[in-house]
Length: 320
Image (cartoon, rainbow, N blue to C red; front, side, top):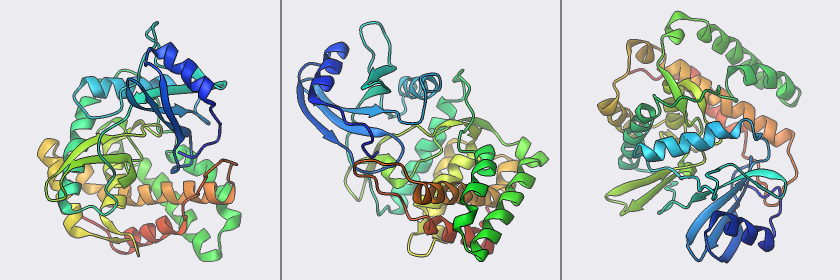
C-alpha cells in the first residue's frame, strides 16, 4: 500500500463520475504495504479505497476482483468492487489497471487477544467454504514455484547460516509438495496474506466484532491449510522472537475447526505448512528489502522476522 503512481484530483474526479459516486471530497495516499498504490477516496457518496495495480495485469486481475464479489455475495465481509455503468469492475487509472471498493468499518488490531484470533479462525473457515464453488482458477503466484525461482536470487545477500537454512527448507518444501498427504489436502481460493493489518474489527476490546478481511491481491488457489498457517504465523506468535503463542493458536484453530474440521492430511501437515508460510514471507521480504522498487512512502519489512519464525517452527514443531 505504498504510492508508486501519483493520482491527481482531476483523475480521481473523472473516475468518480465514471462510477456514479458523486463529487470528490478527499484523496489521500495510504502508507503501508509494498505491492500496489492505494488511496483513501472519499466522495459525497461515502468512503472508498482506490487501488492501482503495479504488478498484476489486466489478464490476472479478474480472478481477485470477482473473488471478492463472490465472497461478498456469500456473506463474507470483504471489500466489494464498484462497477461502472457497463458493469465493469476492472478499471484503468493513470494508465494502470485499477479498482474501487467500499471502505470497511473499524480498524486493524495489532495486539490481538485470543478472542480476536478466534474471530479470525471462524471467519477464515467460512471464507474457505464460501469460496469453494468459485469457478475462476489462478494459482498462488507466491507459491512453491515462485520460491524455487526467487531463493537463488536472494541467496547472495545471506550469510552462511541463513543460506543453509533457506536452501534446506526449500528442499524440504519440495519434498513435502511431492507427498501423497500434500496431494490430499483440501484446496480452493485462499487469501494467502491474512496478517493483522489485513483484518478489520469493530466493537469493543472485550467483545471484538470482525468487520472485514481485505487486500486480496495475493489470493490464489492453494491448500486451505497454507492459509491457516499464514494466519498462525502472524496472529499467534510472540513477535519479539517468533515463538509460538499456544493460547492464541488454540483459539484460532478451535474456532476454525468448529466450522470446518481438519482432515487427517491437514492434521499431519500443519507444521510443514507453518514452515512453508514462514519460508514464503522470509523469501518475499528478502526480495523486497534487497531489490526494492521506488515508491513514495515505501517501507520494506524486516526480513529477519520470518527467519526467526522459520527457525522456531523447525526447532519447536506445532502439532494438533
